[in-house]
Image (tube, rainbow, N blue to C red; front, side, top):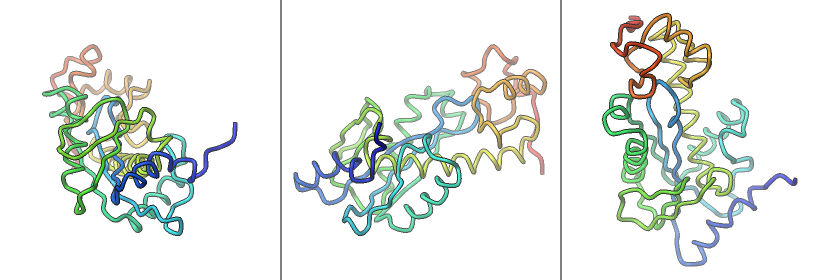
Length: 217
């Protein structure tokens, strides 16, 4: 199958431009599935003139780490506006992961320094904003703007979880970024839960009393 080019991923954007939109925000999240750490959402408005397009933007999961980091730097440099927000594990446990994800996306959109004419969301749900919005299933792979947002969110969250590995050593956060790998499950069974674990995600792996590693100083 032929790999999609940047031009191929502008179908939805060009459709909106033809309808009169000027600023299109792509929104995506990273971190709905992990056992630990926050869910992170990014919103980004990029220029869509041919000379300003960034080659290689794709679903962040399909890119190598070095490519994601290079593209994230380019996206921030060229963006008309972007915002990255997070909701921590306590909020996730309190209101559930779907609601925390929607809240995170809403905050990212509302904190943009430029108000978009339309918002593209990755997924099949809506968020509580007054702006026009369009949900695109697998949008991170199909939409240029959503793909850019997915890259910003993943690079930010990966860096954050790498830092958490230093604060809470022994769990392997720098390697698995909080996802439920065997390494992570085994570490929880040995060490217990730490401050950034999502209690509602791992009820059967620990007593849930937060008796794991304390933050290093």
